[in-house]
Image 1 (cartoon, one colour):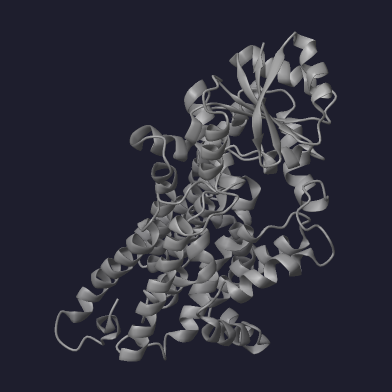
Image 2 (tube, one colour):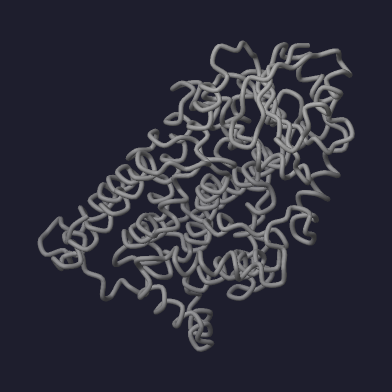
Length: 507
């Protein structure tokens, strides 16, 4: 990025070259920040290991319909698009962290390019500023390098909103026609990535259209062909899965919608002020180094006179404000709250801040360019440190090497973690699923407090044969042996690892 992006068509042909020049600089920045050290860091639990393990389970079993973390238990808590994309990358490039993270580097790059396209409507003088802000903000940079559903959800929601912007502020009749189809394609992909949360931008679209154009205009959003695209892309898998697995519809509606929004069943900061504890630090520290611009944008957006002016001119700024504020309200009211939920909201935030900063932000200034370059280098340095210098206990590559060293010489075909967990959700969080990629063996997570824990252990041994049991140290060996007695299995101790006792179990 350099000062040429701020030029005002000083000579013939300069203006026509600016869009392509901005595209090249934003693409270069996205490649640098997104791909550097991308395969150098081990999988960090619980999320990265869990998603990669589910993709490997699909690859090994051939069952791409039903997500599962182990061969014994299906898990429909997320739709399959994330797992499909990771599995596809690993099929092409091997079972390694670089292949697992490649889709996320591409999603980060794609999000920046879509923001550039949005910026041409929201901040036409400097359309590159919004993707620059998004790329270099602390929260978006670091979370976009994490394997999760939210990175892909952000990309798919960006596709949907770009379609709406082309439809609502078209440069031509063709843009309006195809923009609406693009919107519903994006929503279909978002729904296949994370279910109903992927439709939150639609709430802002409906509210904006009703405020500025009237309720009758809202119906134009729901064109039959667009809805057909959404249903085919977003609902085909749901229909097939529900028809194949009895009880799945109830699970989707009760657990994944009602349970997450209205109950504390997922133990995710459900308290009265949980939203403040989770989301305030994200918005405060995550917008670094663009605090000044964010504060100015917040002050502008908080003014009722500004809202009235935006509504009167049908300004895209009003839509951006609604796109940020309405989903934010839903996240605060919901009883399930995690920092990554806010990642898609940094799209409208970047566009709003860019619009406020555009009149004064000038990369032609030497000091501004040097500070930005230093910040980019600092981000890369932290990413390199996370890959090479930070020895995290959540690094499941390091954990796998420790287990392999402890059980060296033992022959086993699976890893069975028997944990003294309080609930099923804790099993998902505590089991180092990512070991599967490093040790090339399936991983099971079994809750000792389950009434059928012994049956689960025996079923794993029957399916896999000789296995390595990693048993919580609070579980007495005598109790374990009695559990194994249900299937006449035996266990030989081979050491300990962290909080677990290690046994080689033979059916």
